[in-house]
Amino acid sequence: MGYWIVMLVVLVAALNALQLTATAELLQQLTGFAPNIVTAIVVLILGILAAGFLTATVRTVASSAGIAQAPVLGQFAQAIVLDERSG
Figure 1 (tube, helix red, strand yellow):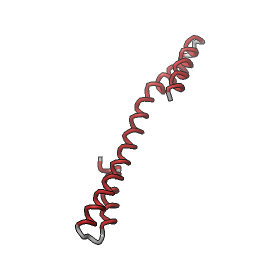
Figure 2 (figure 1 turned 120 degrees about the vertical axis):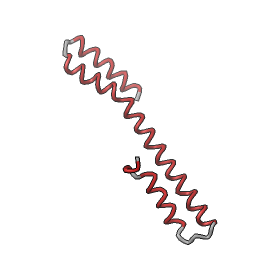
Figure 3 (figure 1 turned 30 degrees about the vertical axis):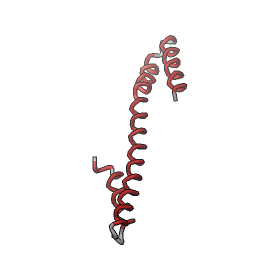
Figure 4 (figure 1 turned 45 degrees about the horizontal axis):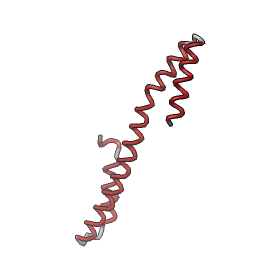
């Protein structure tokens, strides 16, 4: 990932040297947007991990309490965590 960011910065510098400013500005915007993409991927991964942990926890607690529908409750908890409308 770092390699490609360096390549984009070098490409922007080269385009500026060639006085292709419109293309250089577009690449600068893309370079500036990269941290947002990385952050979104990290948040997505953490959400998936949290949903898996919560699913297992709810299923285990419900089974220990003698609830017959423990797997369904676990899946329900996962669906709530991963629901994009809940934010």
